Amino acid sequence: MTRWFENHQALLSGCISFAVIVLVWQLTVDLGLVKAFFISSPSLVAVEFWRQLMSGELSTNVAVSLSEFACGLGLALVVGTGLGVLASWSRTLEYILEPFIWLGYAFPIIAIYPLFIAWLGLGEPTIIAIAFIFAVTPLYANTLSGIKNADADLIRAARSFGARRRDLFLKIALPGSVPILVAGLRLAVGRALTGVVAGELFGAAAGLGYSIAYYGDKLKTTAMMVSMVLVMIFGVILTQLLSLLEAATDSWRTGPGRS
Amino acid sequence: MSQIELRDVAIEYRKPKSDESFVAIRGINLSIDKGSFVTIVGSSGCGKSTLLLAIAGLIPRARGSIRVDGRDVAGPGRDRAMVFQEASLLPWRSVHGNVRFGLELQRWSRDNVDQRVAHFIGMVGLGQFADYHPHQLSGGMRQRVNIARALAVDPDVLLLDEPFAALDAQTREVMGNELLHIWEHDKKTALFVTHAIDEAIFLGDKVVVMGKDPGRIKDVVEIDLPRPRTTAMLDSAAFVAYRRTLRDYIAADMQSLQMIEDAA
Image (cartoon, rainbow over all chains, first blue to last red; front, side):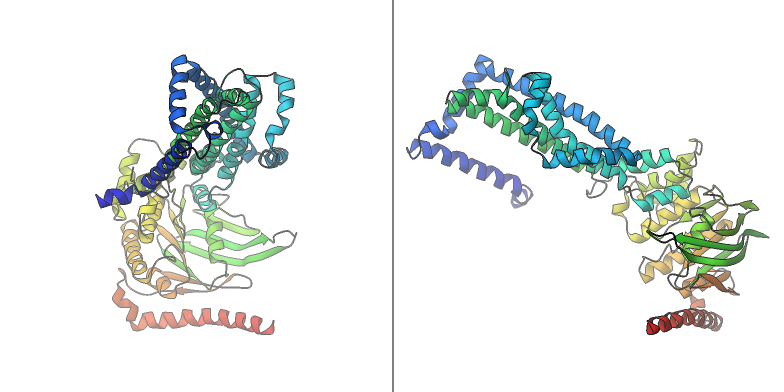
């Protein structure tokens, strides 16, 4: 029993602190310390959640946001890793792309949102484009650095057995860069979600970000909070899934497994 | 009959960020008989590893010729296999996958490859560990995999670059014994670089002594000890005499280094 507690200490502590926050939130409102108008309350959110679920509003918003998320991230995965591989072969391409990577990390991308509206109109294409730009940077950068930092000793050993360029890429650089690529994917997931919600806040017809903005305008705190909580839940689930994938692909370096 | 022939070999490295080059080794003449075990010893910086890498075809030479079985060395080839100081194993592959790696790169036919791999894993005593990954193995075990990988491609010449340098003294002795045991099996020509004098004498039919500034061959000492070699020989009068000779050569190198440092 004590063993079980030790093994799950992190998870358990996290759950407890979360439960305490929910409880304090509820009590603050129930005891009249803060008006529900400002912070709603867990029980109000639960009721409103049920209402939105029954009316179909919730599933529509979730479906729209997730499909935009999937499109943006999918596109970023293809383009980011593709360009990363190409840039690892061509120094020229790497130098050409470098300033955009600086921008991708340093520039608040959301500031060019109006331009995207001008080009792509208000709605899904613009939101997908924003999510794409948010997500593509770490995917490109991690693919490139993963391949470029292939172990020089391994490459020399492979060359001593007559490895060709293709062998070096397929048998050393690519498998060796999988862990850092998955780490990039984990960053990209969080950034793509940010891109979708931010995009929807400014202009959309449906989606979780749209719902937050819509009810926010109407000062309906509780209804707004349902979507906020959902965004949080998706963020946590997705990054946790990626952490599992990361651990699985990195097991040859850290894990005890012997598959 | 000599299998490896080096004639007036020189190797230069380009100095970083300049057009000047640095002479790593110069004027190397050496012939190595088929089936012999030759060790190369010298203080660090004498270019002994450079020489080995050149024979492996991994670095270009500035001058001279290197021939293996009469063929000019222009790059890596199936007739030579290398064992590195760092085990250089693919961390994401099992022991089996790592030993198989060389065979894959040399495009061996898939038939019987797994049997062949298993045979060489058994030969280096890792039969129980074929499914293990490198991070689960000790340093000595990793070097066994490294050796099995080289043996598996059936080279005519085995090139070993300080393969036991990172191991503790006991493991090192065991590995040396086992390497000789494996070698006596089929007597492949072996060229073994080390900075340990005892190891060089214990393993070699000949010890090539290298000096530095620039890297060159000072002498080739024939080791007239019977085979199979045993650890008891380490204390024999003959062994002690070889040790003294080689130590004097290398001490001379260290002294000249000391003089340079004093002058500076």
